[in-house]
Image (cartoon, rainbow, N blue to C red; front, top):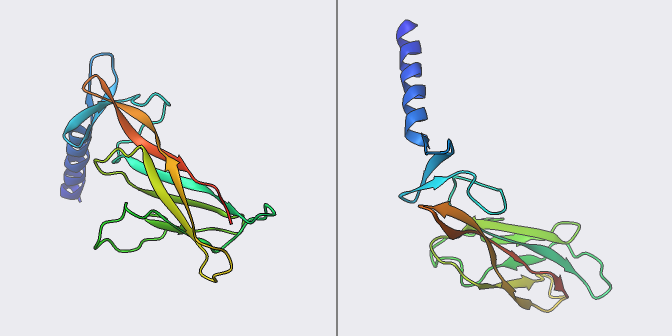
Length: 158
């Protein structure tokens, strides 16, 4: 029993030192892609030690402004050729309020615009494409602000 407690103590101690360091001014730092990121980090006040994300959201309505559920939303050109289809990662389906969200890793690219496509599997509504601008929050890496999370909104009217 005493040996198990000692091992757990060592694991907790080591993981605490490996994941975080202090910088002058008392701000914690974390590793990201080989860099130290200083918290508080982004201009928006949000900080995450995870990889940067591309977050696409919006609504789908008909011409009478009624929400459409079950509409397939995808990001062509973002998905890798052998990447499996994963709901809410590289595609989404609108809910009963016509809303959708796709959250995926951004990777190293920093696109200024993405293509979002809405497809009705029943064929009642024609497929529609929107070229949505992407805005970014920033992270402070080695005293430089770099684009971090990307945000795009695409609202469809089918």
